[in-house]
Amino acid sequence: MEVKNYRPRIADELLKERLEYRGAVLIEGPKWCGKTSTALMQAESVLNLAESGRLNQARELIDIAPQALLDGAVPRLIDEWQTLSRLWDCIRHEVDHRQEPGQFILTGSALPANREEIIHSGTGRFSRLTMRTMSLLESGDSNGAISLRKLFEGDTRMTGQATAKLDDIATLICRGGWPLSTMLNGKAALRQAIDYFDGVVNFDISRVDDVKRSPQLTRSLMKAYARHTGLQSTLTTIADDVANYGEGASIDTVRAYLSSLRSIFVIEEMEAWNPNLRSRTAIRTTPTRYFTDPSIGCAALGAGPTDLVNDLKAMGMMFENLGVRDLRVYAEALDGEVYHYRDANGLECDSVVHLRNGQYGLVEMKLGGEKQISDATTSLTTLASKLDTTRMLAPAFLMVLTAVGEFAYRRQDGIWIVPVTTLGV
Image 1 (tube, rainbow, N blue to C red):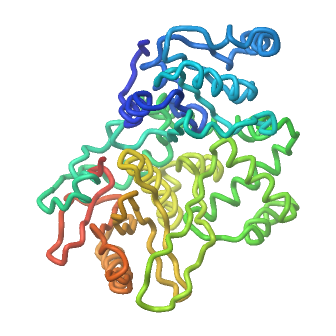
Image 2: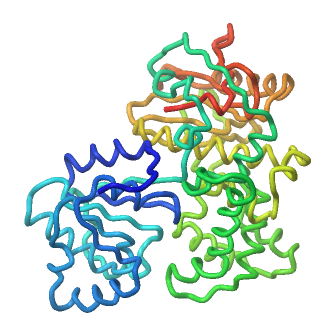
Image 3: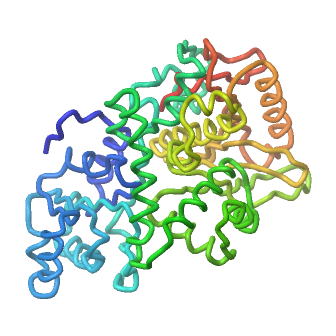
């Protein structure tokens, strides 16, 4: 099925591959990130449960004639499947019955509220695919001259050129990767993240499990969370910060609200990387706090591009969130994950891109400038020297991912300096 003005996504090929070997593919990710459009490009029929009338009919049919919901040309798209969680086992049973790959595509912008209604995990029948907002490569804001795949393959000859200035990067951070925002300009492009934030605060955080939650507390919590972007802040620290906005919240309340935000893919924390080290250094395991898109944090703070340029510390935090989003999108295409590293001595690495085959690359993120890049390269080489390469592979690459900079290149010491608008998959 065709989608008007569809901009190709990295997930297109991943979905195609998974439909070739699995009976059903579940696409999960934040609202408005393009899941349905991507699914429609490969679907042959659709059951849209996002429509209230269709959902009400489906709730009646699930008891008397569930097959009617599943019949249709394949792959059949079940949009917002989690609103009728009992469909999961029906689809699992149908996949077993048909014994053919590529039967169903499910999309979901939230985890199902009634998870107890799901009997079977779906192992062997479903493949899960995470979709995020558009990376800069997908939105056309990166030329992709430096390929993450080629870095892992050992290509040392790549170079690239960037033209983005600090103001441009600030706009890209606040605009975010929402597909609609990438087709708009000016205030209209920036408004998409603000509207998304308002929807989360006033509606979505309560719809995930039909538990009424305070919009004001949600607003204060997301603002506090934004102030801890890129940090391994504890729940106690975040709760204390919420209190600074006049909203008292216990640690249990903060935990519950963050769980809801996680369930609707508003936040996506980063787990710690646990490598083999030559020393006995203790590794910190608290997750790093990130939004699924940097524009959400900007909307929570009420910050626009000019505000970021005037507060480079805040911009550095939000730029790191943008870089993490893009690395996650590219790593997904390479069957990889992104982690962070921090040890008891304060040595950190913003991102470790780790592939299933054991390869990994170390990435530090900085706005730019000689001093920041020098500090980043020191951290990278220090961490690399601590790794026990008799028990694990040596890093495939060391990279400083920058907001600005004219050229992307590999230095004589082997460290890559890569403006974010030259990075691709």
